[in-house]
Image 1 (cartoon, rainbow, N blue to C red):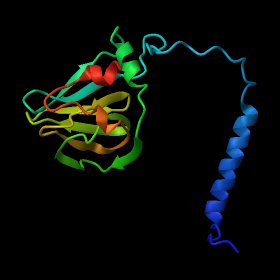
Image 2: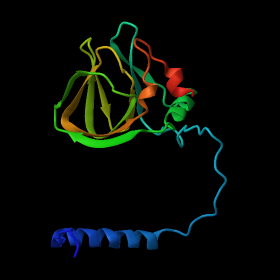
Image 3: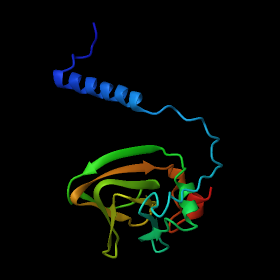
Length: 186
């Protein structure tokens, strides 16, 4: 006899419908194309046409004075290759979760370099100078202010649903520095 409880009718119907949808998708899929040789590493993700992969990219770091700063990074310029290299990092953990409207955290540091990817809603990043920077769907941000006072994280008025990709803690910059070369050009 199994230790599992029997499935409820709504749960059984949901699982059946998901299985049917998966089979239908396989039947509707075109025949697989011939395999192409893999592109050379590293890949440069310049987008396909005038629209880049993401609208905006930000870098959150600790300045020499111990205060967090945020800078905008190019998304469709030669430095875009740098961002593509960074996105190929190994992750230690990926978290997906939501935050209610206007809820968040007071000043805190990134425990490890973290790639923030807004899926729905907005996330506001606040700095000690009183400024707030909005992250929304289509943006990415790398938070590597692992020291100093840190930043505020707060969901916007509609709330926020985000993916957070945490990189190895060993990649945290030294106190008071933003060692982008350590993260980006390894």
